[in-house]
Structures are given as structure tokens and as C-alpha cells.
Image 1 (tube, rainbow, N blue to C red):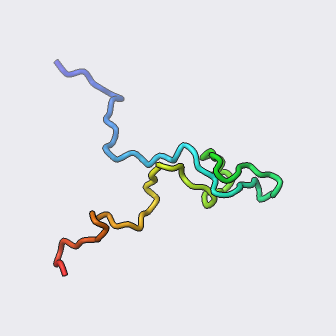
Image 2: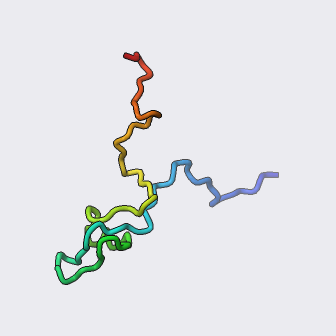
Image 3: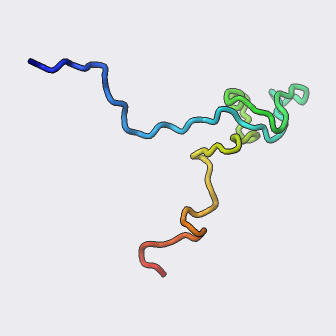
Length: 92
């Protein structure tokens, strides 16, 4: 007797999930719609929905919330313990 077929049941690929966008951003300065000084949408420190940042092009005027680590952010600190980069091959 043949085993029952499991069509439609497949394992998801083993690739890591794409980094999630933060739930919101924090405005670093007052944000205006369309550059109109009378159309202020958010003040500095306000939570800004992700959709608004994309729609109005405010990516350079906002930051992720505190405690959110984005893979796109870079660090100026080396990954080695003690703050010093190390070499494994041909130590000088």
C-alpha cells in the first residue's frame, strides 16, 4: 500500500527571515508635508508611522526607536572583545 500523498505541505525554505522594519520611527526634527511650513505633521520626538516615512520621504529625518537594532545600522566598534581587532593569520 502506498503512503498518502502530502501535496501542498512543503517545508519553508531554511533562509533567515528578512529583517523587520521597526513598528514606528521617531522624528528627529519637525516634519512637514510637501515642504509646506504650515502643514506640520509631526514634531521632534513624535512617533511616526512607517508608512508615512516611506510616503513622504522622511527617512533622513527620523530614527528607529530606542532598543531597536536594525541590520542596516553599522557600528564603528570592532567585534573583538576588548575593543581591539585581532588577526588569526600571521600575527604581526
